[in-house]
Structures are given as structure tokens and as C-alpha cells.
Amino acid sequence: MVKIIYVEDNGQTHVVDVPRGASLMEGARDNGIPGIEADCGGACSCATCHAFVDPSWVDRLPAKQPMEADMLDFAHEADPIRSRLTCQIKANEGLEGLILHIPERQA
Ligand code: FES
Image (cartoon, rainbow, N blue to C red):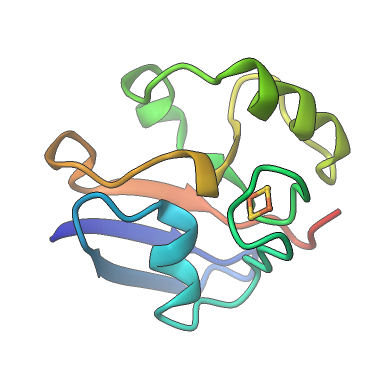
């Protein structure tokens, strides 16, 4: 399990143990974290699993693939540096303690 910290727009914080290999979207969805809608179920085709990576973590995540970067154009108020699609990042030991800020609303 990998501890991931999801912070809602209102500041409510959820510390969740996400199974290694599961996506950060699945970690949110399967634990009832509000604000990650994931309409496409993780197929990188909806942008409703958008979250802002905490600045302290931006450089520690795997780089975006072109498909994720393209899809982020459809995310609400996406930030070129901090925005990621949580369905495209898998939990692993290196992400222990990762902080994700959930946007006010999705697309
Ligand atoms: Fe649809 Fe991530 S769940 S793009």
C-alpha cells in the first residue's frame, strides 16, 4: 500500500492507502473521495480525474505521456506544471506521501 494524501478544494484532507499498481484515480474513487469523477473509468479520455500535484512533488512524478498532455487541455483551469490526470499515474513506493489537490470542479 502507498499512502496518498488527497486534499479537497475546501481543505478537507483524506489520507488513503492505495494498493501498489492501482492508479491514483482508483485510489480516490474506491475510497469515496469527492471531486474525482473519472467518467471514462481510466481510459484517458475524459479529463474528469484531474488533480493538481503539490508543488513539492511535481518533479518526482513520471513524465506525462502525449495522450495525457492532450487530454489536460480539456481539464478545468489546468495548470501546465501541476495538473495531472490521476488515472495515468500508478501508485508505487516512490509516491509514498504524495499530496494531490482536487480542483473546485472537473471539466
Ligand atoms: Fe477519464 Fe482519467 S478517468 S481521463
